[in-house]
Image: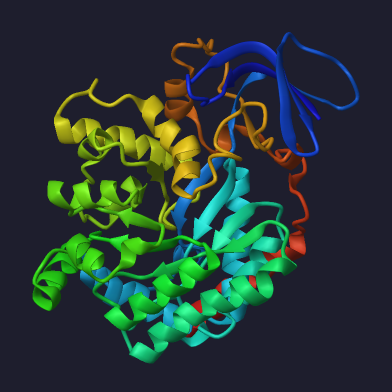
Length: 432
């Protein structure tokens, strides 16, 4: 495949933006970027479009699709109440069928909005055994690239938490090879919903399988207060003493972390999955990304299941960090695009393959029609953040193949698949 690009936002080390070029791919990889446009039967014409790398969502919950519009009567006044009154009430109703079809629906929406890679964390205490089989089946119906996990939690019993670790281990060791573009990782829900023995088991398994562990870290103050009461110190210090950072760790949220805790995270090369859209909806606070950047922590963007359109999360990042500093020029929106591409790829340990458009990387590309306003190279990244969204995504390309376009929809997905998602959601709501 060859792609003509009117404006190419590469997100390479120099953040190069090029005009009127063509990207040459072979066997799913980028082999060259050359000046000018070309013609031919294998050429995709985006000569009037802005082309960006495939977006990477480094923290999401696909099963949240089943909660969208659900008839839930709850008015939480705190983050902890949102967990107990909504999320923990809903996920007990999930079946393996729900796991499959919420994953399928989310993957469709992600591809429609330019996401080519994601990191998902599923929860469902009644689907611990085999839950990831359902998730993988849903993801595998589409051509997206994803890494999936089951959130280990002892909120009910320690046995459940250990079984959650075991479900990740089972998928990675027994089922992952059945899928071409679906892999597994490990996940701990939080420190406050787990125990030292579960954490130790998770670390041991992650090290054996050479996989990262993702966990919600200091998202809400409940995590901090519980750690102080249980361990006599804040969460990051407690997790360090428990040996979590012996493994490769992705810390989701990291809203309530101190400078000293950030030092520990930096010393252990912890990747940060920043979820600004979710953090505003849950009213938990604003992560101190400025201090993270000063410590050279790697930051990526996650949607946390709230909205698969990662452009909304990029805009939220730009908005809340300007608002926090009361400075309308204090945050460069181009940084949000960096987090949603090469940043998230680095958090997932995949930046050698995805996250930027340059020779040697996989050919993951998104073409955008930003309308009639001229696009300038110096302002193109910020323009993408301010004007991007599902509505302007013309096509999504993964490894040199068009996997979504506005004329044909998502490759491999049928109207019957969409009907199954609708029916499963109705059935789920009946059980709530």
